[in-house]
Length: 120
Image (cartoon, rainbow, N blue to C red; front, side, top):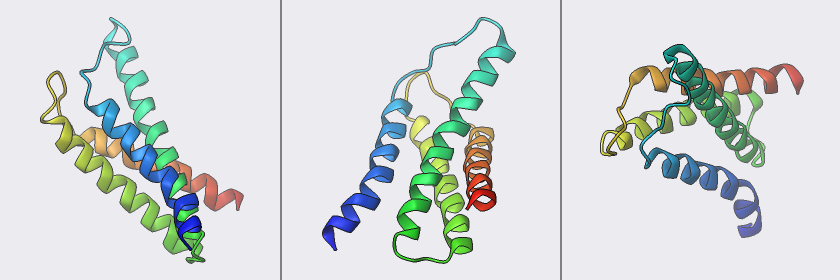
């Protein structure tokens, strides 16, 4: 039982810690051109939360949760974590919390779950 918990829940917990750690640093511009910087950063948001949702989905399905429920909960948990991450960033010098980042996090999680839904 403990091995199963470790094997399936350790990866999303580690990924959440990685997200938290990167949110603890001030961000640097990726380009002097605003729209390029914007695209790189928002793509990163979608990618990191897409991975997070996939890891959550994997953990939930390990306990034979219904596919639909696992997809919905994965998106919901990833989005809620994105919201808490933005709150965390409000205490980080050089970072600004933005609701639109939560939206991009949710889009990333949703796209990852769409792939799961269509593929499996």
